[in-house]
Amino acid sequence: MDNKIILAVAGAGKTYSICSMLQKNYRSLILTYTNENVSNIVNELTKQGKYDDSKIKIMTFDSFKYRYILKAYEPLIIGAYSHTELCDKITIKAPPKQWVNGRYNPLYVKKDKIGHYKSKFGYYCVKFSELIIESDKKTPFLTTAIKNINELVDAIYIDEFQDFVGYDFELIMKLYEQFKTCIFVGDYYQHSVKSSEQKQNNNGKKTIYENYKTKKDFIRYLTTNNMIIDEKSLSASRRCCHDVCKFVNDKLNIPILSQEINTGRVIFVNESEVRSILNDDKIIKLVYRDSAKYTFRSINWAYSKGGTYQSICVILTSKFETIDHSDFNINKIKSTPLIINSLYVALTRSSGNVYILKESIFKKHKNNYQ
Image 1 (cartoon, rainbow, N blue to C red):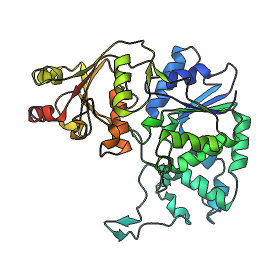
Image 2 (cartoon, one colour; image 1 turned 180 degrees about the vertical axis):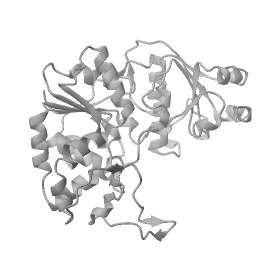
Image 3 (cartoon, helix red, strand yellow; image 1 turned 45 degrees about the horizontal axis):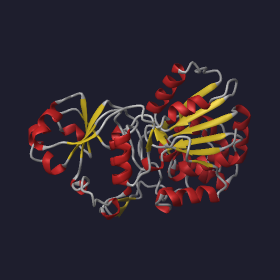
Image 4 (spheres, rainbow, N blue to C red; image 1 turned 135 degrees about the horizontal axis):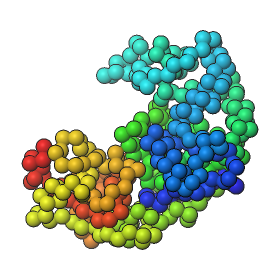
């Protein structure tokens, strides 16, 4: 099995495909970003009758870094900072920022000191990758570490790889370069969209998506680094119907096909339908932000990532007020890739109908649901 990166679309069955790829009697390691994704993978493997925890290990990337690298090579890692005291604790607390309200923070510890990566509460979870990469520059050990992991595992699969940024991205690239079988699966257009369980974890480094702002540029970067790209295997959505995929293609300029397993329509909500849609708990409302302040059943666009619902109602922001116009052009909208990608995530959550409610109509009823 060759190393490769599979670029998927929303609802194409990324988790299903990874589980289907697993070869019998292979020692496989599946890495993903969140505990929720770990549960989804376990459930899918169980459904396929493949789950064997003696051969298949599934964990978050943070767990992998801690167990397979940080703890295994801790004396070398902390020794790079002239430190010898081992630590069995981790903390999800955020490390002190260098600047607070425009002033230098005296609690901040520079990155050439071990205190940048750990406190009395333990190693900072968000600093795992940075500590591994930076200590390797001082005392090289990572090539040996990956070689030894190669002896323990036959294949590594990384789910939702577009979520890996900064030092995390740098580390998985080293895995790809040095591991005998390494498969990444992800959706370029879901990059930078963080679900509720995810943390922004680029540690001040520019993300790969800031340097390569289009999918074409991103692919060029990957192929320049001798990576094999598969854009065909997961180019069609199992979840989304033809009408939704066409709408996303036409309005967001994001290529996505439908396997046409499900049926549904894109329906713009008019004034007379608003109350019935908002009052129907079977239709999940997806709002840009602040979903908790509404009395109807709702989720933020970004937080809906990874979910599938029978019917949804996407409540637009004012930036997308003219999205139903024939001359609408996403390239002329003053927005960010994060907002556009979040809207893409929201629009592709339904296996049935997608209702769209314009902000101009919603604001007339908003106060009744707060």
